[in-house]
Length: 278
Image (tube, rainbow, N blue to C red; front, side, top):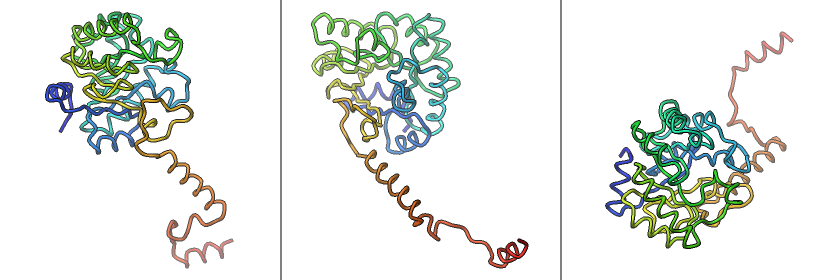
């Protein structure tokens, strides 16, 4: 069944958990879609896991459109959400609408995601008024890493927790169709989920959210360096890849690969004639 903003809302209302995973390329999108994931996030996290940056800040609109195009060609049933990169929407409402439109029109996304609360409500409203669904993002918003002083859990004091609740209500009023809650205490996420009529998608926010999202490299053991606490290892694909790469190197160096079954034949008379010409 084709997943849409409306079907995700229906899942919240019925209590059926929403599944979301990141994908940044055609092949991964095909596999995730085949497995039945409800939504695919083409996250600006691609800056870190695909392009090797230390943060998401260097990611451009061109990067996001390029990767979203690939995912949209592979996923036929998942609800595709394209991330709006740093400075693609903060500068003005006009820029926000134009860039959101590009992710839909050029990238093939079904919705866009942007970070922030009350400060970006004018952008959310304008994008929604342009008939583009918006997924909001609260808590640890990676584009604010410099303001936060690092990747830290958010909402642990009364004032900060109250601010996140207030922001969640405001982005819902502005027209967001869902909200990602990243790295907030589980009990706080549960309160927000109860207060909102739109779905909450947690990442490091506990089991009471309406759904979950993970960066697929984290859940498959493919991340270089630190793996977030909230990312459970569901399959150690990274270990299998290393094993495969090492076997390929070893067999190539020894001459074991390629074997006869990996090669193509030609008529021996043609070969003899070619050798005689030499």
